[in-house]
Image 1 (cartoon, one colour):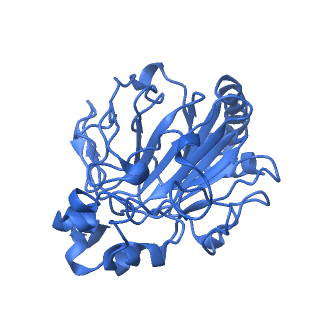
Image 2: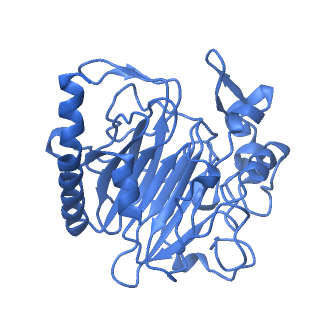
Length: 334
């Protein structure tokens, strides 16, 4: 074993202790902590984007190598989205490009959204002790990577995991495929064809008129809990009381066991009452629900209306976030 390897090995326990202490400090200073984990076989570059009226998160873009996780704090009431970019190359100044999910050719997205297609995690955090979080995983803007979102909440809080663990790039119809030496993403029918019936726009801009299509049904069949089109609210939007944070894991297999006893595994669509949608038979009225993060300019309605007013992003050097090895993160979830 080389000197560098021995030094790295001996430093690991100390790094773990420091990481845990740092995490506790972040958790105490922030209403919610997002733990972003990369279980993929290649690096990813997560991006974050705040919605109207809420600040950008401490970082709006960073790299995660395989096996790494990042802790990103968010204030109470924060609303926005998170996604992963793939196939990126950035220079020393943070300029570059990504094959999927690119946000203006910069490492820090700085108020720019991810270019479709990209799998999105969207959330509106509640305020106060009785505030509800609303969250979902959306394929309305297409798909590039599997992702699972797991709330960290007390047992019995009624919080459920959601996401899309299927590799839709393998089953993507030819006309929706994004090719970069292989299929790296699967476009939405709206992006591919630009027709109102796929975009829930024009004459199709209402829940009654905009219905599932053959293309959105492919997404829904593979990922029953994820949004497949703009008005797919009833089985795709979830709520949670008292979540201390969310683990957002990319490329996590369904059998990983990451979910705990207080969340529902990704095995079937949620039962009646577990998911709250703006339309449908669950009896939840839209007046009680906060604005929900949009998925981009392909959306025509539902929670996915265009609503983003971008604020300036903070620079990375004066922010509080930390890369951790996955063993440390798994300890935090126990």
